[in-house]
Image (cartoon, rainbow, N blue to C red):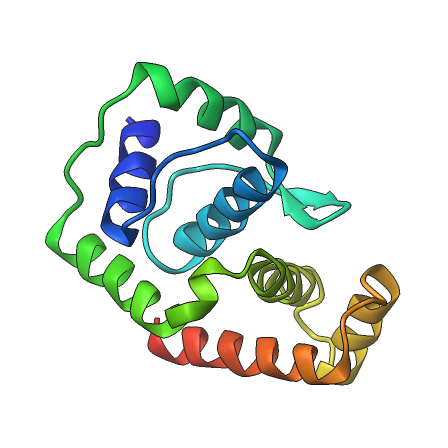
Length: 150
């Protein structure tokens, strides 16, 4: 049932389920993380990997879902939450790097609940030194918006 719900979320976001390239798979991983945290719990577990939070189970589901499952119906509340997430992300919905950064920031923050923002960003910089201060600041603003909204 969760695979069908995942497909319904992607449909609501206006996304095609495509796992042909690494970029497409990364985008779906990061969006599923955000969907789970803020919209619809689907029960995928995540751990840290090279590009931030990653779910091997989700990767298998994405490959299987393309051929086996049809989208299910979301509740009215879930549909509204997915639409709100889409509206808040705006053009960032298409930026896999931005999604990676927001999701990574959220994951680290959830692993360090009593840490200060400075401590969280220090860990983020160690794990992802290629992101600039400006990019981290933008991702932090987006994460704050999502946390306030949901």
